[in-house]
Image (cartoon, rainbow, N blue to C red; front, side, top):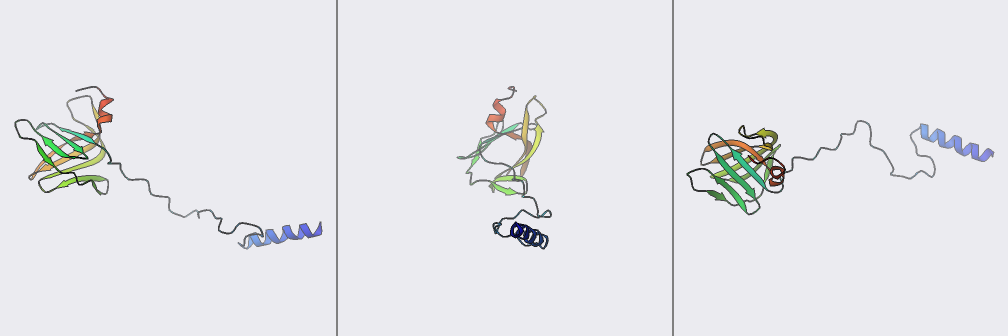
Length: 145
């Protein structure tokens, strides 16, 4: 009995000094209170997006096969999709004559009751078109315009 009291006393003293008591697993630790929290995941730009804008009217698509821009009385513009490049919270597709930027932020097209999950900005040959974007699945769950 005296031996087990002595062992307990040694374990308490070692713990007070910051030493692990005998039999404690080495390497087991908890994160210090001042450890930085893990960074939240960034925006998800995977998958397809449909884009829409008004004044002037325009539409666009981001697909794995390519990017497209359509406007009334204009030929459709298309470009290869080399993937998204993330700049902070903004997803950027394309380069050169057609660039699409999406920012995760609630957006309304101003003409329908539809709500979009992203703000869209399309630059085509120096002209900037502003509008909204969402995934086809998000749009399918909403009333048609």
